[in-house]
Image (tube, rainbow, N blue to C red; front, top):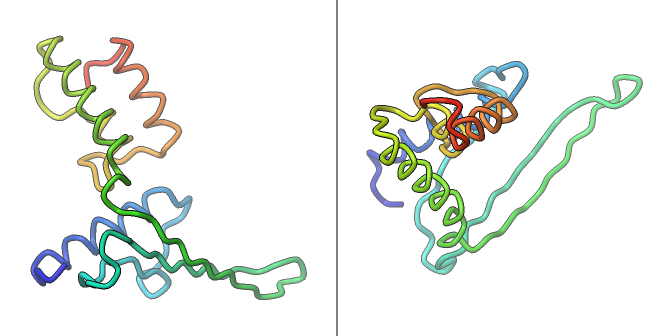
Length: 133
């Protein structure tokens, strides 16, 4: 991505997506999540480098480093299809406005964040017609 003005908002949404699933939020100096520029030789491949630090038994420090490489274009297709299905359900039920349950379950930075387990149950309730949004 070469659009510098979008890099800041993408960094915020990616960081919040990670922070929202943590039991306790990390201090800013202990987390870095962000997008990169477009790398032409990677084409449709996205690479993630992940480093986790912690302590083992006896307070022994440890760290894990992981490299994840995925084809980017089909990566979110299933999520988008399910989100569209929920929008179609809302249209058929004459429900307007923000669909908080599906948004929390499917989107990186929804208007209202719930933990993954709760968002999953709420979304299923929405699909079954037991929730309005």
